[in-house]
Structure formats: structure tokens, C-alpha cells
Length: 126
Image (tube, rainbow, N blue to C red):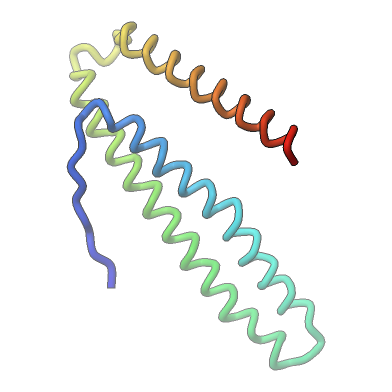
């Protein structure tokens, strides 16, 4: 059974929350999807009938995971659509909010620099 939960955040926190959600989806896709596909492949390569037909359940599980990823992406898309309508009303949609865009680019550069610095430190230690 699936349920919806609500979370209240400041409007200016929406971009960060969307990034967090997308990062979680990306990680689930990066690690879960290959594992599920490997399981399907392993079963399908088996010469034992019982194990070979376990591919049916593995495929079903993989498809359910893909559906969950799609639902998560739909949720992010809905959030972004509402956010865009709030910060860029239809009349202004064609005009870019230069201040907002500059702020987002600066934040992205900060995150990339932080990630780059963290990777360097990690590489030096490891």
C-alpha cells in the first residue's frame, strides 16, 4: 500500500530539496538497477530449469523497481512544475529571471567545487 506524505519547506529551499530527491533517485538507479538486471541475467543463464524460471520473478521485481523510479521522477517533475509556475508566472515565462539564474549558477559552482575538493581529499587519503 502506498501513501502520500506532505513536507513543508520554505519556497527558496525547493531547488535544494529537488536536488536531494534527484540524487537519491540517481543512487537508487545506479546501484539498484544494475543489481536487479544482473539477477535477471544470472537466472536466465542457468541450465537448471527451476533457477532459469526464477527469472520471471526477478523480471517482475525489476519492473516494479522501474515503476517506483518513474513515480519518484514524476513527483520531482510535479514539484518543479509548481515551483516554476510560482517563480515564473506565465506572462514572464519567456523572460529569464537573471538574478535567480545567476544565483543558481553560483550555487552549482559552489557544489561542484565542494565535490571536487572532497574527491581530492578522499583520493589523497585512500
